[in-house]
Length: 215
Image (cartoon, rainbow, N blue to C red):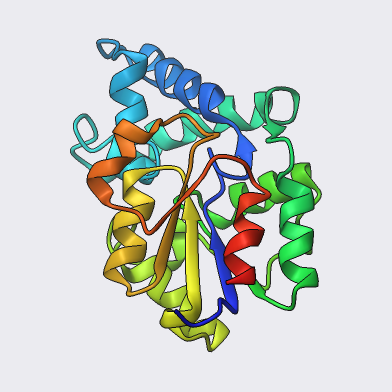
């Protein structure tokens, strides 16, 4: 198996622990717009896909969609820095990946503004050679386009690229793009949730990613 030269990362649930804030932001949005509540699990199932996908059930016109997105983002941004944390070992892992000479990229379903806010909070804003957000693509995850775009802009080879993520949407996107996939188990999903996506690698702790570089 060729040595890895490029590592792509998801953001929420992979580098930063923002999951409960995301779920609470969805709950807040439905409440503000007078819509019936959903359970945490129902929102969790869609994490890794953009807001437009999550709100498609209720926002049948652009005005409604934009209003719901604005409500979500206002709440999320207001609480972001006080409630989001970095997973232990993640910063050191990303630094070690770069020290090993690998190119790095972020591929997220957040827009670019939200992505950079999360990276700044983690102290990783300068640690990514490229950032691909939901506003960079026409077809978000689980489509292959976000990963394809990151690979193309980096001039990388899919065969020597791995996409590290916490959801089945990440795994499907990476596999469709022809890169290797690594499922993290420190995020909101366990192995039974991710096994249907058939990831190439399992990571129980961030430092385990470094063993893939050695091979």
